[in-house]
Picture (cartoon, rainbow, N blue to C red):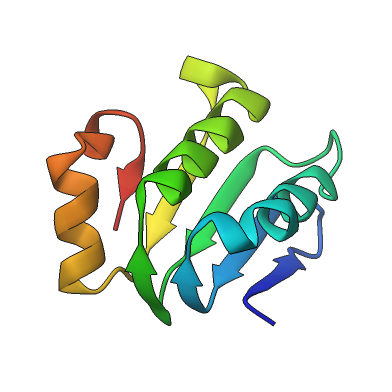
Length: 101
């Protein structure tokens, strides 16, 4: 399964793991993943350890997550990006919108 989620014991941190290609084919699964967290989540972690590809629709999905999580007040970390994914995020100036680790 390309999208997997886990929630912290206190329910405040939702981790969304994207495996393989992060593109339009994962749109519904990604949306379902962040919406399942509910109102108690105040930190979203997008784990890209095994993400091999990222396209413009994935960038749009990250922006939708940001809007869902509160816009400018959203707490979202993007973690474990490979060099290609990190380069795409940098070119798109996503470092201004997200904490990228």
